[in-house]
Amino acid sequence: MGGQWAHSPPCSAALPTATKRTVRQDTKFPQPYLRPRTKRKVSRMSPEITIETVPSRLVAGVDFSTTFATLPNDMSGAIGSLQRETARAAMEVLGPVIAIYTEEMHPERPWNCEVCVPVAAAFTEHPTLRSHELPGGTVATLTHRGAYTGLKGAYDAIFEWFSANGHTLTGPPREIYLNNPGEVAPAELLTRLEFPIVLATTEHRAS
Image 1: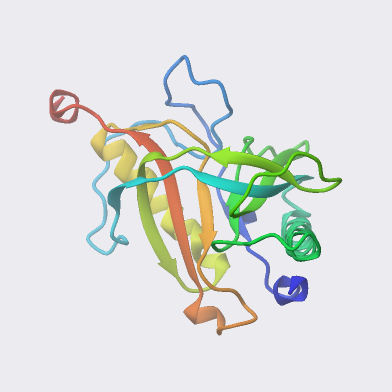
Image 2 (image 1 turned 45 degrees about the horizontal axis):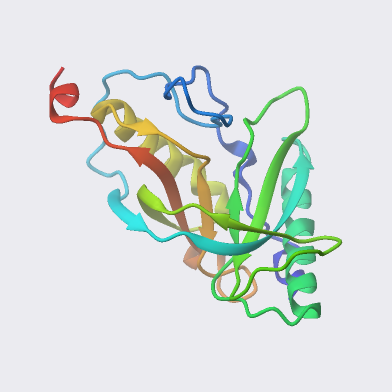
């Protein structure tokens, strides 16, 4: 199964790095993408952004270090390793691959990512995989249809939406790959983006 990503891995390398972090001061983790808060009108052609409450997920994950130049190959390799190791351990996989951008993208040094899949049971020791719970809660979400190279437009749309509405990003963005290049043509790829969020108050939005 690992080879299905080999020629067209998820490619968020074209995504922008943050120029300013607009998050709560008590937030403990790096924020990779949220842009400075400015009042901009979201295009009528933007993908549909919805607010959902998602459950926490028990996952098996692979952590890896990457750079802008090596992200496609590193991501492909990590997904292949994840699929091989979960199959070898006969784990019951309950959903598609998820990528989590746990650190800020940096143009001059490596940064850390994770790929994971929901699983039925926790485990304690494994030489490659890490067992943990992916937090649930309120997320802003949209689904991108098309090649992974088009994901930047989806991120741009949600950044504009954050800025226009004054909402706060509270966790690393997630990409959920609802299908893969081994199953469908690039134009039919579906990638769900999730952004943990604290919604702005009505008063804040009006200001």
